[in-house]
Image (tube, rainbow, N blue to C red; front, side, top):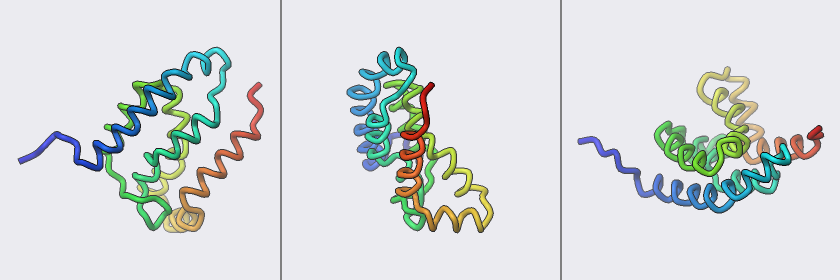
Length: 133
């Protein structure tokens, strides 16, 4: 029999993301919209939740495996806080997920060598250095 209830691990991730969405993203959304900028501190906090790392195998620097259901449940919860903020937090997945799912062996080895934590750090540095206007 199929169950549509989240697993215990999924529910823990959803609860953590729900708190972040309500307490952080939603409260910062108006200011971010007015300033045309989302605080990197807020994005970093979203990265610390581990949603991206949870969808990346351990061998690539993550701590999970790609699971579409977990991803959808978590993203739905985060988007409740603010869709634009959710997209900013999930930007690294635009690099990692296609490489994991369809990248050549060379690309996958490169991602494995870099690892997700270094990818996040590199993107953080790049976004911090990028002028907003």
